[in-house]
Figure (cartoon, each protein chain N blue to C red):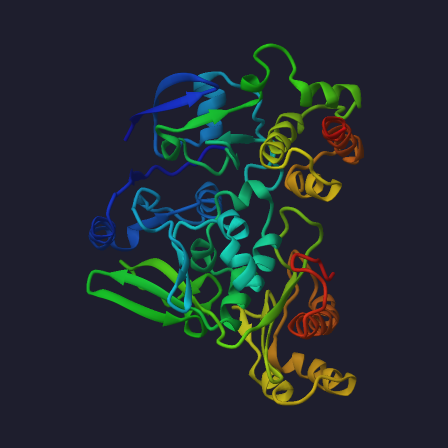
Length: 296
Length: 155
């Protein structure tokens, strides 16, 4: 089925030009990077922009690497770029593990991490991982730039803190200071193209500190402060893990939809959480399964 | 508004007039006459529209033709100008496809893998074709063909 809706297309070569064009066109414009969500939405008539602004010609938006103490992920960096980066694999292994679970090679060659969080569907794989790394999203608009913490980025289903006329230029992911490990556990119906039915990201820091976030079990990806507070500064044992699993219902609000029932999600979350938590703790201690392992 | 774009398709230059809303899949099939990329799910799930864009497998149903202006596209027609290549012959020997609808996508996905990793593991092959749905074979003969071909090279 062809795309029924006509639109114009521009491919600016500078960020200033892109910002100017977006400001002129207001909410009639959409930014196009990988297009793996946007082209599908155009075909389904879920969006009907007057103008697409292709940002792949803008120099610098493909930047990926350590800058000071943070990983810069430019707006055009694809999931394949993340997987193939040695810096990501070694210094930000949780980003690597998450990127490996996104769809399939043919999608990962186009889909970008920035596009993933701009689409902001509740099951976006980048969401929980960026929450636990306490990443910052850098945007530029007609009145200048601003930095939005990941915790304030997701406003609702497919809704973000980005305002009309603004464009995300990059994500900055701070490197935890004295070492870290993590685990990303994604539940899907099959490997390959499927979206998450539920997901859990765990970041383990030295001296028994943990950060936890869930995906696809609320209107947005969510951090789990109660679980984090319970786990912190205590040595991880069976009874503590059981207590933490009982808090999951207070931190999430899964619904039934086309991919899974509420009950299935509620059943699987503690299973996934426990496997992820134990793997993250073991990895921090220097053992545990290699990154890229599937836990469910 | 129509715009003329230039595509290099299997080594040949094409100037084609496209609307911004035309997908690469539609332009390849409808305007250039390359029929190996198939119209399947049209949402990126099935992999039957796979082509190589500058060497990387992409879903041509999710790429606008205008985005590919000035770039190189390889389809199965470009791999087999002188008859089936080594990989395609391995698939034939293993009777790896039945209806063949997924075959062009699988051939290209595996070609991309072998360019990066000439001696892949079984898991590497599974990962590479995980986004290419085949409803006939159960995948095993496809994977067997690739492993058989690439293990031969190792001896």
